[in-house]
Length: 96
Image (cartoon, rainbow, N blue to C red; front, side):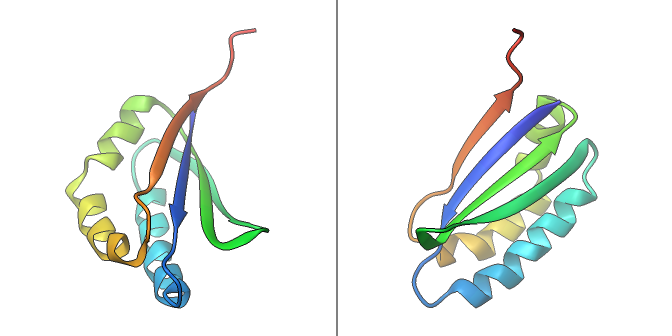
């Protein structure tokens, strides 16, 4: 299993529109092969900073979803609502 950390920063006044579209992205990800679970958190010091932590069966499953046309289409609607490029970090458990 891997974990994917996705950080996004929403432009001022677009929070509600972003939340609606982001829910659709998550709903589609849940249906993607290899998706295990996920949660989205709000930075307590910056309410426009969102962090999503998703668990995937494998990096190949994540890559398939990340590069899918479906995700690209959904992200095309989210990207204009962000004032910074999303940052993605793929994490795996330490072997220790």
